[in-house]
Image (cartoon, rainbow, N blue to C red; front, side, top):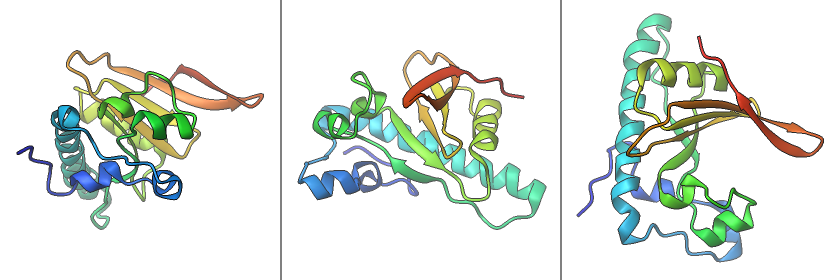
Length: 158
């Protein structure tokens, strides 16, 4: 049986209001469970580091990592207008946020403390798309709306 991280159980990756509203089965297929579990452990390590490093600097309360979009079956991905080759559909990506951190701060934290990420996209100043892969690219981008279209550009991190 595939083991998911304690703070990131399988159901958090499968949860989708759009899937529920439209009656779409967003269950992660067995052949993708390994990738989803790897992503859950990546996020667990991120959460642990945020709460060890960020909290020690700010003396803040414990900070959760919130998944707003995890796995997306092809039908769900199409329904929300996701990229045709989205890593969400391969169970290798999640859109996340951390209350108390801006999306830019979160990108910078991940880039500095989690070197095995594949791609980080700071999306619209609201959340961060993070993905993992067997051969990580270490790509960091920003997504913005320009004339109604999403435009991606390289994002410098400090």
